[in-house]
Image (cartoon, rainbow, N blue to C red; front, side, top):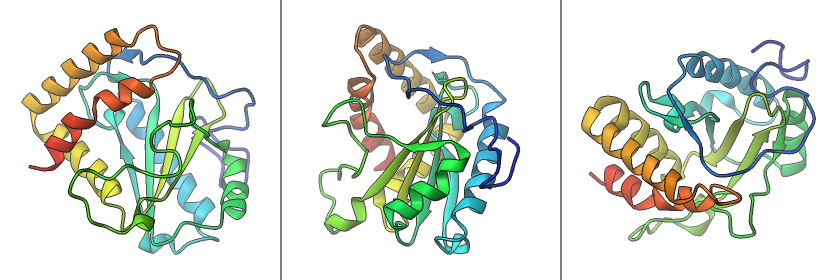
Length: 210
């Protein structure tokens, strides 16, 4: 990726216009270029968010299956920022727009993880810690999703823990890929990948509860 925040943008989220693409989950082999693209995207986000939040108190991560070497994935990079507080929406949208990030409304009214993450059974944290913002790259040639969550979010911490366990455990990684392939096949005719995503919930919760 090239260009500072507020500038011309880079490869992962550019100024390119067009609708955010949706459709069923299509898995592809791991691409070694996902990691450097994610790193460049996180660097740009750190610069863009600096006027709005204390970035030294934030964590910036490449998450999801594209962050796990050897794991088949949808060709869409997931980035996560955990911040002590969510910036004011209008200011946040304006700060991210020059990088090509646009608010993602979700494919359906009940799409998971758009403005709020869903607590797991037994979670007792207050309602406000589950709030989030979801953005998507406006460049269809470089699909990417940005999850902006609170530092206090258990869901945010679990995404990183799950990534790290997949990286460290070949058997868990193989089991997860098999589940993903089964779900992708089962939902190949769907107009979006919401139900594919929901189908992974129990596996992820079990893995992060260990």
